[in-house]
Length: 315
Image (tube, rainbow, N blue to C red; front, side, top):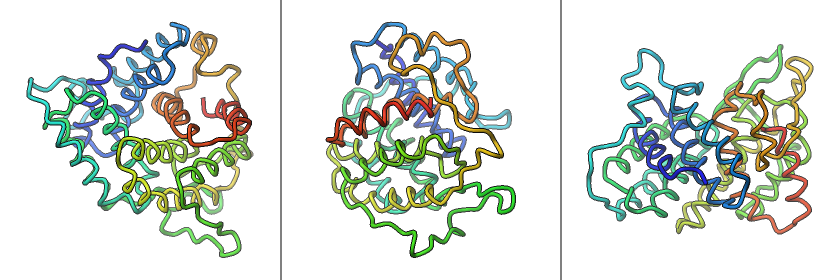
């Protein structure tokens, strides 16, 4: 198993991320996700858990692209430090959902608002002794930073360059029928993964975030916030539509490559050349966790199997 110690460390970092910037939330969220992978899969080879812990240690040491910079008000070490001991107040967990409700209906930074809030809610609901005022207030402050955030940006090739979401107009003939349920959303994400992951698209968080945004909505629903999750479905659909506008830029940057091994196998973690560029260090962990949470909503077993194979392009 992955050591339980990583769960409170991840929550501490997530609750202090607002002191750096909203994207510093990647650090704590990834460490929490690493712990939850072991809960999702309690019978994997011990080498898998050791490999995951090695990646979490890299994040805690400051090797992530989202780590605080030299002029930051806090260091990466300080992000993960424990708070002074205080009593748990699990009734305050609802405050995180209330803070998220203010921005969940719009696509915010490729869904990071939902991703960070959802994984915190799961952690605190499962382990109420960690639900302290300091942790919850910090995560609420992180949610507030997304209130005015944009949806993100995408790269449209050498001629057009990078364009922010508010400048993207989707032609009427290319607009798709919106999904309205979490199950339809999950089906759409897996279809996208199966059909297009061999392509290289740059923007709106890539399929990493399309998956994790959807998984976060699924987890919100399963942890008692179904109405809130349903409010976020249109924003996820908008996220997906933005991602679909991106061109394949393989000719410019090279094709995406597929991992030889499944990340749930010991063979995967034995590799000496695991990719950590393009934020793979954080996103690999979060997407191993997020994919499973999302795929649970898809009844078609054959589709799930195909998607699992295609997910290796993200690994």
